[in-house]
Image (cartoon, rainbow, N blue to C red):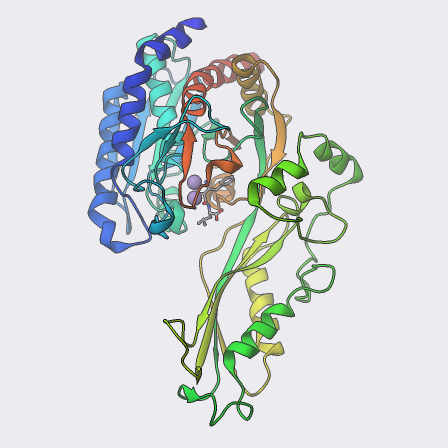
Length: 465
Ligand code: BES
Ligand code: MN
Ligand code: MN
């Protein structure tokens, strides 16, 4: 299979240049100001699929941003792999913290990426990882080694909740029929130790508004005599965790499946350096739920975090004021078998209950998503592991991730198929943050590993049937 490697070697510069071009289009789905760029990116993805040799490619309109759908069926008797990815990206803010402009990609060498990393919004999440699949498809077409049928479904609203994709999947079950779903939109342990993501957390997201007096007040004339909504809100938020960092919302943990001692022992074997972790983040110590390790806290345990909080005067200088309103955005990451709607309801009920009568509270739910775990005793996982073993020289380790891709649980429900999460990013790639980057090594390694997944999946599938 070293033909794959030499094809990649010969086309390496072009593969990189094509990705850089895609990264230059600011496809920020959250901000309507970028609408034309998001649409332009969908067109660019369609063109790339066509150029790679995909027989049928279409832009599927939805109530929101379009889905790029491609299909290359070579034989109905062969298995079908459905590749999912997203072409939209997170907003680049805060832009002033970037060392180079977010949509003008540059390649820089770093300690973790001695072969260079591509710095741009979306380089890792998910344009870089999604584009590996298009290039891997090109490789298979050019070398005439595509072993199975392949479908591509690349959406433009992942970063804002995948609403249109849900709409699309529910209406196109037979079109999307497949034997396994393959996604590269997660990470791995390190460039020396690949891992396969076997779990994603779910999400419940709410916005809260606390109202005190009917107008902003002079903090001298009224201070001390009227409830300050910011003081109240922060007190309420502080009470959502107890001294062990357990979440205090009644019923919150009722459906949490506790990991068995065996599973925890297995998890603890994954290579991890607490010192390196602390150093990378410049923190004196880690912080979290009592009696769980860092890796457990950020993957198999549910959380509650304030993502933003505002109110009152935040301009320059001092303004003496008691604001009428205070706000916060709060996310809860969920684990099996917590249900996002149930958790949202528990939050609303509790938050209203703990509010003192001197303020009014309003809770508005945002998008949510179900958690997901995938078993490792299936041919999809085995094929991925064989592929990684071959290109990295060591077998992959199964690892549950703390992030969320809510649509994966929906795929299982609507399309009845398992998802294999073959991510090539690193936690240190700064996705969603300033200076997001993606290793050139990771990009090319992905393009090399993906054809092997198709190869081994088809082989194992044929053996099974
Ligand atoms: N690709 C990420 C999710 C991810 C990253 C999972 C790394 C595991 C490892 C995805 O684009 C994302 O950012 N998801 C959001 C949820 C969504 C509803 C906005 C998240 O996890 O915050
Ligand atoms: Mn993503
Ligand atoms: Mn993301």
